[in-house]
Image 1 (tube, rainbow, N blue to C red):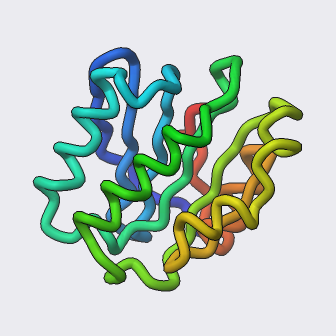
Image 2 (image 1 turned 180 degrees about the horizontal axis):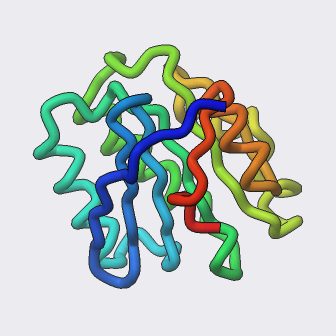
Length: 147
């Protein structure tokens, strides 16, 4: 596996954290609060809007450290705002969501996410290492990954 340098880290309100691996066009997001009204989401939207090319990144949502499920309307609203911002410029990019809560995988099949992110390849995982392997095609992010 190819090792990468330390990512750039952006800390948002309410413990939202974004790790940016520019070398392989990867964002790793940690979202402790799962409500669209959370100030962290507003700051995240602002970051995407201010970035020159936010569509070039594959994205991994790491939900493992926090209990609970994300209401599907939060994901739908995020997708709606995302496509207002980038249109279809992100075609072919990947999205991985890591969550070991069985309610997440039983309630939200990969197809549900694929329907609201039609330009991206979407995959649900309950294991961080498997998600990293899928989204990076074999890059080793340790020791900089959060788990």
